Amino acid sequence: MKSSKTSFRDGLDSDLSDAEFSTLAIRGGHHRTAEGEHSEAIFPTSSFVFNNAAEAAARFGGEEDGNIYSRFTNPTVRIFEERIAALEGADRAVATSTGMAAILSLGVGLLSNGDHIVCSCSVFGSTVSLFDKYFSKMGITTTFVDPGDLEAWQQAVTKNTKLFFLETPSNPLAEIADIKAVSDVAHKNGCWLAVDNCFCTPALQQPLTLGADFVVHSATKFLDGQGRCMGGAVVGPEKEMEEVFGFLRTGGASMSPFNAWVFIKGLETLELRLMAQSERAMALANWLEQKEGIDKVFYAGLESHPQHLLAAKQQKAFGAVLAFEVKGGQQQAWNFINATRVVSITGNLGDVKTTITHPATTTHGRLSLEEREKAGINDNLIRLSVGLESLDDLKNDLARGLNTL
Ligand SMILES: *Cc1c(COP(=O)(O)O)cnc(C)c1O
Image (cartoon, rainbow, N blue to C red; front, top):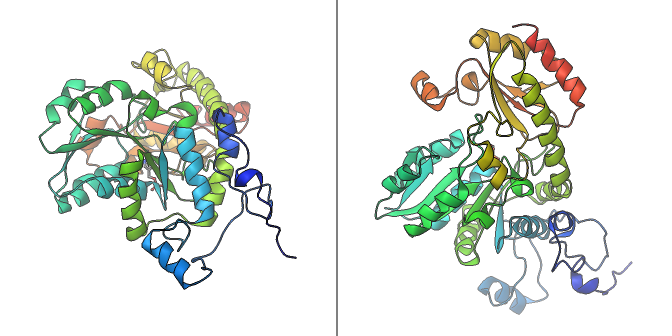
């Protein structure tokens, strides 16, 4: 059957000019093909054909828009990019093969030899290694600062500083950085602020509306939400994103069309998942805080959290990740973890399956004892990324752990 040439409402799914978050999460970026597919199509093709040689030349020469090769652009990946840009309120997004590829592309796209980064010391471990070990080889240096100390951000600025970088809430201790206040310091010094929004996602926190210039994501976590695929994204202003895209299409850390399709599906339920997971995390944090064998619970939703009010101001809910210290040391933490029967013992987070982790011997195991102590990652600390199982089943499972203490 020949496909009809009908254009579906000019190729756009619907009029989204006034649409709110929930609508954009479900419909944003979907340009239907002439087949009229209701759901987004996967385009598993490495390259695209041209009607004639002149068209090929115009595409390659950049005089005509359109697909050439899936390392550059792909229609399924573009839906994901347009949707995540709409959800973060950005001009443009670029999709990447992993979250780390997003941070790499941002850095290489924006910075040159001699430039300097000021970075929160409470960021993802691989981000620290990327900046400290690899960017430094290219002459891009980094100073790490306490994210809550505005004076420290200012003090760290040199005449070569171009980029501020932070992550909030932090992993695993849920420290909150004030995005608005840090962006003011960045802009006063003529620098950009990039925020790793992995833990909140735009469903709970929109850094660009608080003054940030760029957002990076590990789509691997909550954007997928069901632990199936690796991916990432950078969003920001058009002019700078063109540089980020330029590096990505050349460097090659592009997102696969299949993964983009999984993430598009993930975004449809993002807000519902994050709200429901936050609700369970809040209930578990309150419940754990009352328990005998628990020394301390780290969750910004608790009134006992020192930045509870700041979190309440800049986030719509407190997120799915919490951490707690059991009475005792590493053995007691391991006993607790080993006694569980429902939750998964794994290093990942952001899944509808609840995951339990011992940071000191896994995600933060490469740090020296001194570095771990400085970061507050004690041997008795356990991280929980709360999923969507029944709250009662989760409590019963954690009670198995509590019984070992
Ligand atoms: C997982 C993670 C990353 C890296 O993402 P990958 O998809 O694993 O490359 C970056 N930042 C944060 C906060 C993360 O949790």
